[in-house]
Image (cartoon, rainbow, N blue to C red):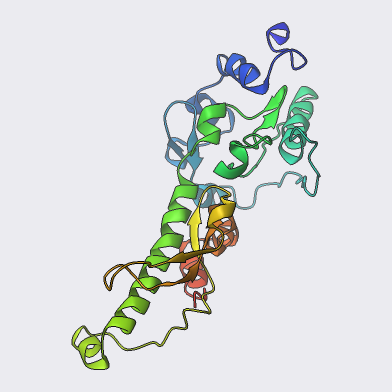
Length: 249
């Protein structure tokens, strides 16, 4: 099988295609990891989520494994960096009889369509299925994007209302004037691409019902504070508490 996956002669996507023919289904991996059916949420045959809180509670008191952190690696011009090193390390540890599990972040759409590729590793050290992994996976980044932009919709809508209407009209709408400073907004819009031309823009160019004209811009979704909060929250209660402390304007 190695002869069919030659990293010297084959591009990464062809190696991934060959490797995907031998992929184990999520159910097989679940059994090999000793997980229960209720602890794994399948997304098709080869992708799934783990209910980690239930798993950690069940395994409380069990002996812990060792933790290796791969970080701060400057990638080569072709993109080999943290992911390739991490996956290669997993393969090496498995080869010598260990039982390693890797945790790498979901790729952002920005670098996926650039020369760096999809942050899925490279050569024979790749995360597969490549397309599923690179284009959305289980939709977490989309959820972050929507949550971030929902906050901006609420914020800009409120600014528009306060600009258009008197205190009396706002009171009839059960709104209290907040006097948000449109020149001091702490967040912008989010999208999962690194679009330089949208980093600084003017929005709301139109009539009275077309928003409030102000300077704004887009950031890449994975740089959203909501993404950072998701990464460090320990449960839903903690997530909501941290979200509630966000400063938007």
